[in-house]
Length: 220
Ligand code: CA
Image (cartoon, rainbow, N blue to C red; front, side, top):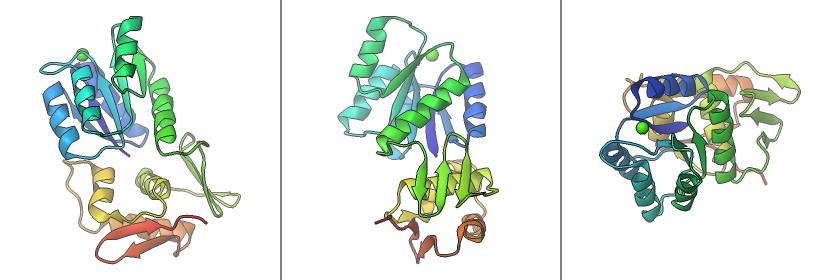
């Protein structure tokens, strides 16, 4: 899952970036409001973690502009200012949730899972598709009763395809989710992950749409 982190505090940002990456997110980290605003205009993200006190443009300003463009990506705001008014302003400006610093990384991850779940319309945190069960909180995948051994990248891919069942996802989008903007992508690594997933969950589960990308059929 592709996450934008906007935090100007070097130490906190660095810790969050690593912690969130370990939880399976592909994290882009920006440190001021103006570049966050530009990135949100040009790129698509699955989640945004947004600090309020930022150089150049405040987090609230970034958020207001984002919602004005009718972009409904889930946003969690981080605030050091523990006042009721700030939280109300944040939520009124279109935030889905907020955390007051200092906070616990596990709580942040749990809240991110919750807002993503609400956003993608899954009332249950666990995704069931035929014999396959994917649990984002436990980071586990089961086929029938059998727990599958799945790498972090394979999990990210499968989670995204399942969350978007019925839609063809372009290769470029999947590569962005796996690697973010900056990392060099080996040209066939996406195929390798798909190949491995098919070996584990069955070869017909993920369809190749030639020249475009991949999809998992929607369940009827
Ligand atoms: Ca700050």
